Length: 269
Figure 1 (cartoon, helix red, strand yellow):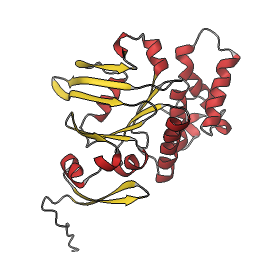
Figure 2 (cartoon, helix red, strand yellow):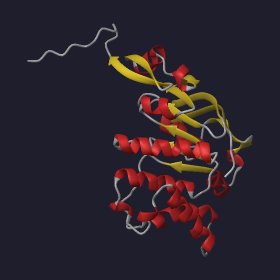
Figure 3 (cartoon, helix red, strand yellow):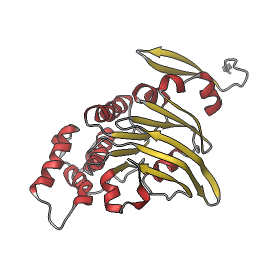
Figure 4 (cartoon, helix red, strand yellow):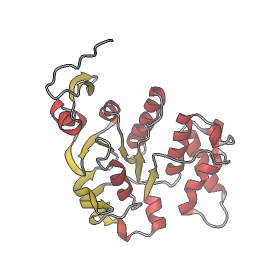
């Protein structure tokens, strides 16, 4: 794994003739945790899939350390960019070890050697999953399953890790565990992480940069303190919010959806 920068230049994408992303341009610095936020339908998942060529952009370039990823062979691309989708079928009759081993497919030959097994054991220890190695993935908790998904992507030894809503359907404890893991990987291993995420407070706490996406365009792109303002949140979500500082990170408290800014009142019948 080497530190890698990702550059997106004038990227556009259409679904059934409707433009979802329009001339998106931004840069993800190496060893950064870069979060994409925005309302439902803003294009977050579409953008993540375009960055891995799961979806082919209509126009634009995606450069990995200056090289257009369209020119990379699929096997080489899988070695450079890992992907954790929002939903994965975790009911397969497969052990944790075997599922993580599947992440070694870009390097696979006919027979796995001991070095390949060692890499899998290393990742399982790194993510505190060693004790579950021979357990069926379907028997794990939601948080443990999400860590297995991340382990499978890390087994590719990528320079860039893309994640679509990695904290969805997790309780607050597992949300923090997953985000702390991702942050540690950027700091200790030099991994570049790009994640689509809904929770603004989680994004504000762990991200180096936040990209605010609205109807296929960039509303704002900056470190959390500059991004998380009442004005940006009002424009992005149509709500009023109070912003507080907690240990150097913005803390967002939604107040009302009432355009007048006056608190909503609920009458008990």
